[in-house]
Amino acid sequence: MSKSKIILIIVAVLVLIQLVPYGKNHDNPQVIKEPKWDSPKTRELFFRSCGDCHSNETKWPWYSNVAPISWLVSRDVFEGREHFNVSEWGRKAKNEGDEAYEEVKDGDMPMKIYLIAHPEARLSDSEKEDLLKGLKATFGVKEDTEH
Image 1 (cartoon, rainbow, N blue to C red):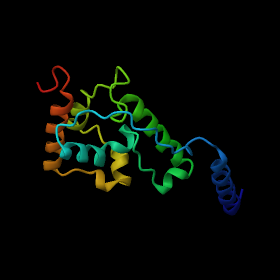
Image 2 (cartoon, helix red, strand yellow; image 1 turned 30 degrees about the vertical axis):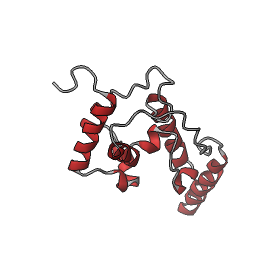
Image 3 (tube, rainbow, N blue to C red; image 1 turned 120 degrees about the vertical axis):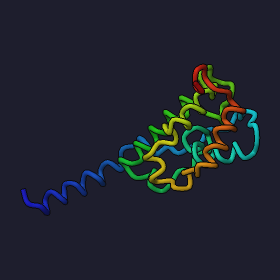
């Protein structure tokens, strides 16, 4: 098969997958209730670095409309909201927030791939410390987290 046919097939597949409806729904559900943040600064840092996936106030970038990237973005937001969502505070038993401190402290959140596309979510060392203090004050920490 020639190189031009391969390129044509790839382009055709990329065009066709745009018709797959998954990843196109960018509705943000209503904000029901937020936790009582310890300070406006904690809330601001949280929303800057975590809010797109862990709230109902997601800012959907242009590339979230282009498959297959849209599939990944939608999955990450759906899973993030399912695990921990500050916009539906008190609705779900597992939505307690005490893991947030540990996830940020260990560098597991925000995800590295998110930081590539969202450099504004990258926190300086002092901002990360402020966020950690605020998360601890707002949500508490799991047992044995600080040992």
